[in-house]
Structure formats: structure tokens, C-alpha cells
Length: 197
Image (cartoon, one colour):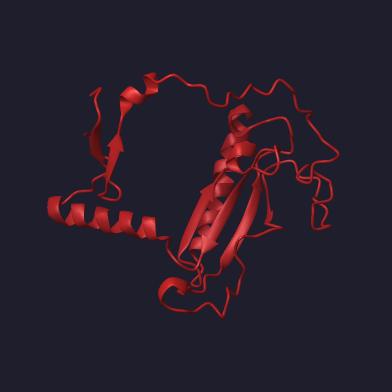
């Protein structure tokens, strides 16, 4: 299809506008040059490199494999805001949880894709262990493992790392996706995802 059309998002059931012909429009907006600066294997100023002091004053161990620690500037806290209430336009709800950082490698100059296969397997094992640990907790309902890469995406540090957020509530979009998948399974007797389209 080359003209404008809508596609149904199988995860949410929502319809999304698709306009492939817009890729042909002239672009006079911002152009980003690729970073030519090579990063060192170790940066003494990096708060995620082994042995360095983090922003909160804690010192990283001399780690040699994936390293996990509680995020120094967590988006969530263990208690949530007990005063979160309100109604109408100002409705709010307490949410609690835990945020962690997972450094993929002690090497400052490598991204996840640059890691040798065995080191990448170590990252995947760390993801699995963190997910299993957090998913087993009764006070948490949802675990999200993700990576922000690059300044434009909100990464505050170029050291290879990702985030693990575990929350007391399931996010709305994820809840809608679950409901959509359950409805599909009920109607067709099989999962929507994981089969040939």
C-alpha cells in the first residue's frame, strides 16, 4: 500500500493513520550528524564506570560483568504519594515501585550491540534474573526493562546501560493490550501474536 490508510494495532485494537507517501516530502528541518568522537574504554568522569563515584556519592564496585543498582534518581519510590487523591480534573492515584539501572559492561565505549556474544548473553541473563526477582514480589504488578539511547531519547549518560522499572500498577496501554489479546483468544481459541499473518 502506498496511499494513506489506517492499520489496526493488534495489541490495542486502535486504528492508526499510516501515510507512507509523506516520506517523499522535502525536509528542511534539523539534521543530526553522526557522532565522530570515539569514547574511551574507561572514563574517569563517568558515574557508571567501575570504581567511579556516582552522582549520589556511592562508589561503583570494580565490576567485570553486568552490574545492577537502585537508580539514584528513581522515577518511583517504595511508598508512593499517600496524599494522591482528588477528583475530576485533578484526580490522582498513588503509585509505588522500584527503578534500577543495569550497566551492560564495564567498558564505556561499547553499546549492547558491540558486546561479544558471551557478554550479551550475560546481559540477557541479568534481565531475566531481575524480571524474575521483581515479578515475584506481591507489591509489584508490572516490570518493564528498557533502554534510552542517545541524548535525544533522554539518556543522561553514554555508558552502555538500561533501566528496569517495576510498578505497583499496570500501565493503561499495557492493560488495554492484555484485554485485546484476551478477547482475541476467546474469539479464536489461539493467541493473536506468534502466528503467521
